[in-house]
Length: 423
Image 1 (cartoon, helix red, strand yellow):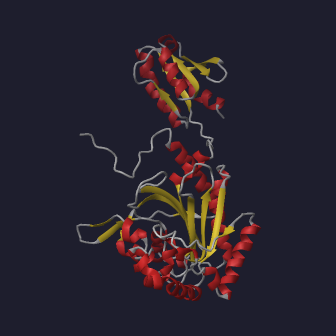
Image 2 (tube, helix red, strand yellow):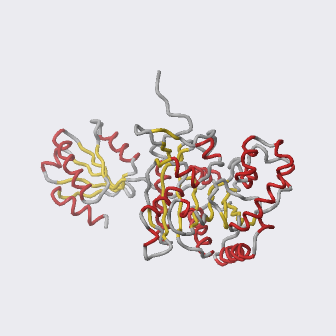
Image 3 (cartoon, helix red, strand yellow):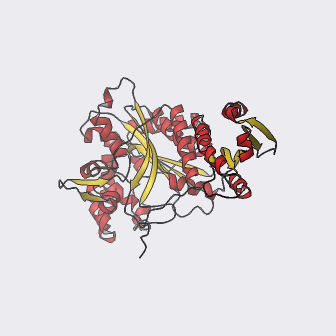
């Protein structure tokens, strides 16, 4: 019996991984422009971190986490999302003492959720995300959204829709919570068991239920927008003003609540409207999480961030039929004829690589025609041909694969001449 890959995971093979490299490098370039620095946190954390931050009423905590006990009988969880770990690190490493505030971070790496695999959605998936911690300025909300939009647009996506909402401050949330309880309570028995459990713990999560989304009470549920106090309204208005100033189009959707308990004030999602993209259109989601640092034992430090799936990013590029400008090529392929020439190319290949060039040679004792075909498949810019006669005469032939031009170069000055040619 052959061993196969676990369900909900994927092998990313050569030919496809280059897309990932391109996106990741572009993400790093954009983060540098916005002055976000990389942070790397463990792939697993103490389970309590996600219980306290993500929320014990969320689908992630209740149904999707990969949790296990280690040999010390400690409960550990493979990270299902990135924000909690980043904020934990921010608190633990006292980043709030950094004179440069807010602290602006980004991360990139695998996350794990046990959910039904479908197109663009896996049990192990890769997220790129940013977090800006330490500022209450609504301009940082707009900036975080701008980071995500910049990455999508720089890689050519056009059929995007940004939706935003305000979840309000604690006072607004409390008023809305009471209204939701009063709205759903008389008929809560009609709803799924999850919604029944959420009624008292976190009634806003009922609005995010996938099973009961068509229930009549969902359509008439009180909107958070109607319960925003003056401070929350003012804040949300500023966010919208700054997005407009940045030239970022958006729609306000009062039904957007996001799936994690730590959100307040600004919440947003970026969706693909490309034809054929699929039923699940969300590419990226995020929002503000004031209060999370205190929940994890740190001082007050308001934050905002987002996370995007690289898998869904690539799916959106495919849906819009966008080909990334990736050109895989090598600088030089060494073709050898005869045993002595073949032996000589081993050292010559290393000299080329140590001089900063990508280079390759034949390892299968192929004929000269097959070696040229291999060079062509690897998109070699040049082919250097060395035979027994050339070796005796201390020379090597260099051919440009683009123009077909061929020149003869002294073998002992080949690296120097090749370097000059490729400046």
